[in-house]
Image 1 (cartoon, rainbow, N blue to C red):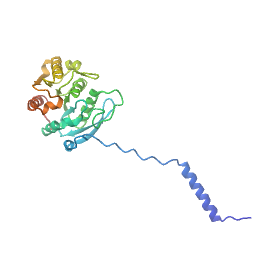
Image 2 (image 1 turned 90 degrees about the horizontal axis):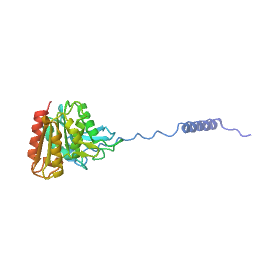
Image 3 (image 1 turned 45 degrees about the vertical axis):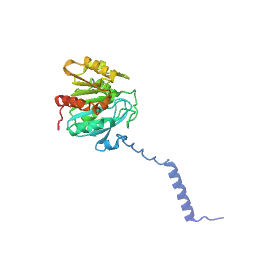
Image 4 (image 1 turned 180 degrees about the horizontal axis):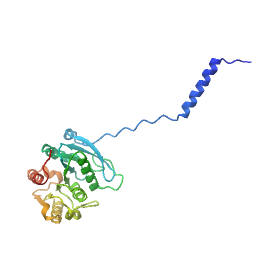
Length: 259
């Protein structure tokens, strides 16, 4: 009869037990998912360099990103035009930050560095979320500025923001864009509003006049300049100084910077 070495048996049993324990423990935990990088300002890294990247969730569930500039208790939310991103606003955003405003330029869902919405797209709901973010960062008073579809979004959003914005600036807003109807919102506005468009940008000059006419008489201003620039281009083209002066006159009267 063959005798087994006790040390060999003990070693073999221990090995079998270890294998069983390992098998029962299941597969190892998968590595934790890495956070996605914030791509705010990726197409204008030079302009964005002086700002702070931020992220928040839109009213439609979209993961939104933005660049925050400046400090203070008066916030300015900047909404861009179609097929664009926050970069178009940064040169003027830096000017406002230099005057003492807390500025947030953000990307709408599906544009720039922002993700897609989880529910039907709501650009005005994204503006509301941007206002909530700025207020969470210390802003008490808020101004909304928008270019083209961004202007339609800020006008529509203003009717559902409480307390209402201190001022609204619309550059080349269409009266309607997708599901948004700024013409229907205009009579309900409680904030001083400035409507700007180029006379040669005829469709949008007409919209500016219609929006102005629909806005309560005590809180409206219109500026139609002699050129065809559209949206934020109105800030830098031939009439840029005139447009900038009109905006900053409104701000000084209705929403001065507060430390």
